[in-house]
Amino acid sequence: MADSTRSESLTQRAQLRAAMRDGWRLIRQRGPSQVQFWFIALLIGIAAGFAALFFRMGTAALQAWVYGAEDVHFLHSFVQNLDWYWVLLIPTVGGLIVGLILHHFTPDGRVRSVADVIEGAALGDGRVEVRAGLASALASFLTLSTGGSTGREGPVVHLAAVISTWVSTRIGADGLTGRDLLGCAVAAAVSASFNAPIAGALFALEVVLRHFAVHAFAPIVIASVAGTVINRMAYGDVTEFDLVTPGALQFYVELPAFLLLGMICGLVAVVLMRSIFWADAVGSYMQDRLALPRWLRPMAAGVLLGLIAIWFPHVIGVGYETTVLALTGSLVLGQVILFAMVKTAAVAITMGGRMGGGVFSPSLMIGALTGLAFGLIATSILPDVSGTHTLYAFAGMGAVAAAVLGAPISTTLIVFELTGDWQIGLAVMVAVSMSTALASRLVNRSFFLTQLTKRGIHCAAGPQAYLLATIRVGTMMRPLADPRCAAAEDCAVLVDRGLVLPASASLDAAMPIFDGADVAYLPVISQNGDSSEILGALYHVDALKAYNRALAAAAAEEHR
Image (cartoon, rainbow, N blue to C red; front, side):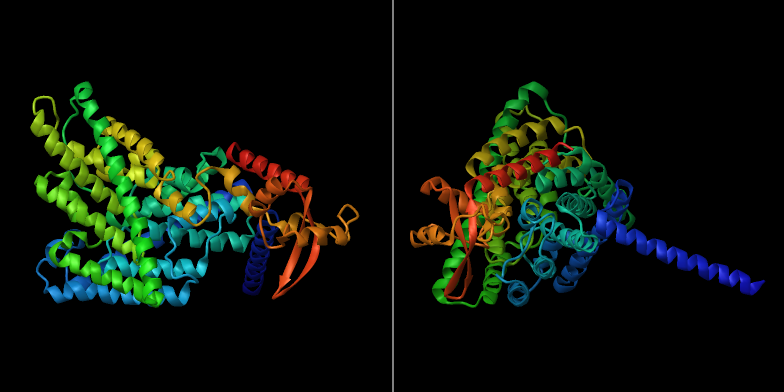
């Protein structure tokens, strides 16, 4: 009897293993069904949520150990009591380690962040670089722990994208499935990092996928909720900022002030973004001019940060304590303006020095300081028709962050979820709408899209601008053996005229040549060192057909 029971148990186990193997093979060959996809989305949400949680807890633990702080939420109060040489040495050593990591594990010494996730969604079938992504996460972890003046949302978003990339590769996901899984991972990471499930889901749709397709909404929400549950298991059901309600809006009378605040915050956001780009350009120029190894660049930034932190420890880390002081109105006007200027410089140095981190938390701090400065002035000029000055700090926090991220919807919601106060919605919405409308005209839509534009990736203009870069000439050409292809002699004539394309080029390089040369086809060559061989020809009509198919597929994905 016992032998019979044991044999039956072994048979059931073998059948279960066989069923799992068959299910895995089916997923790899045909892609997951809807139910399977939702289950995978849940697992990715859990994994990304834990990654974000461990990143946050690890950063706090290392930061507390390095600076000897009992509570990293009040870090700058502890740093004020340190000897000046420690304040200088910690970010310097941190920058050196970051530089060595990026030098050895990334091809260009650059930290991967949200812009690379957007690029992966648009051009990479929902995939990002795994090796460089893991190195970037470690570099950003050390940057935040040793005094870097950035935020944690950029690293956790890219780390989550690495997780979804691994899963997409394992199951052989197509572009549509890969992008949806990427959105799930991003939503879970943001939710777990900030305890903001609604904003996390909308951030993935608005910023990363850049559409609100119905087919992506349900799995992204599932993953976002999973990330939030993980956050609340560790920190409880509490808001990021535990604050007193700032006061009621004096309704119509005060709305023009928030319109003006939104415009000012838009300009402040532009200053912040352009400061970062300027610092990056200066850093690259100095690196080339002095022939410095690229691994020394983050260390140089660490030295500058340490020097600033000796007098202004408020710039260290995400700036939680200073943000709370601004939102509670505990700073005077002179301090507010000075801290905002110094924080902007510190963020530019950190990111221009390629130390790693994100821009969301710094933009919250700078926005809160900007709003408080405006509120202190407005309430002193018109005290009878103004609410509290802290209400302006809340609105400014959302307005600057929304303009930097180019995400008015998710940023408005994340301010509500970070504070737990839904009564200030009208003020925040008015300020956010004005800041994003103004800033998007002075930069290329957002900080991330401007980053991509500077790399020659034009995601801001929509699929019609970047889809050409996804189609390779080698896949669209007609080989010489094809009877519909031009003769090799005719192709050679065009090669002599310089009208030629390498097989590795994409259609974004081919279309301008077609437009300028007015030819029906372009020879395609393979290049092996100094020698080249004509492989075939790319016809203008074939390129246009491929482009139309890609546009139709993108439109279909957004409206599914």
